[in-house]
Image (cartoon, rainbow, N blue to C red):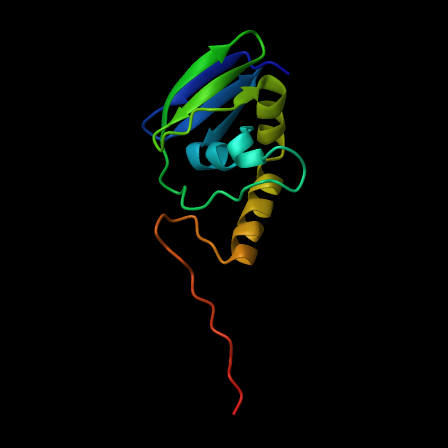
Length: 127
């Protein structure tokens, strides 16, 4: 589904997508960690690379890619991967599900959304 309007909101670090009378906003961190690039998705199932430390990433620019999507440019240097209209609509419609899976994966990996932060896990020691 192709959006009727696409806006880069630099101040709030969000991408605004309108589909008729419905508007969605996807923040930069969410878009960055769900990038369709090989760097994030890998080269096949099971080769995905969990993105960590992206809480403060910003969107710098977007570029049209034919009639089928856009390329996003992030301030951490990431600018590969084409966000097709179909992918963006999927991310909009299922945002909460994708975000929940991402947060669970971070927790299970003992990683953080914050750059340079490594969560500590304490395990009780028996005497």
